[in-house]
Length: 149
Image (cartoon, rainbow, N blue to C red; front, side):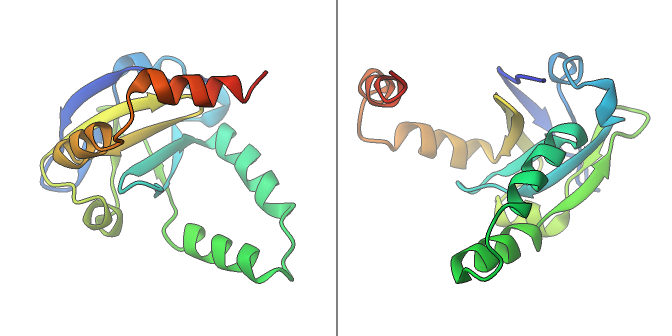
């Protein structure tokens, strides 16, 4: 399974197309068939999942209790923003206009690898997010990683 990491700055053309970094494209499995699902991220970004990884997410969604109001709300809110996109001949994906507006994306983006997916951010929003925690990376790392023991 793909494990994305790293950070790059890329431009977005006037049609909303952006190149996925080559180092990230290289680890997408052939099963994804150059198809991705793009969704509204949780922190004003766009999340990008290769098709094969998205299938695992869908399997988890199917396990949710459809009679539970929070489950229904979550699925509606998440999936109404979701779209399937394909890499074009120049290794670009099209970012849906509604997601670009949500993430405040214009002509430049930060693309980061976050394990099983890629995130696309407005550079200013990303910088504010990274700088805005209030706690040091070391403190957060200790809290998060100590939960795994």
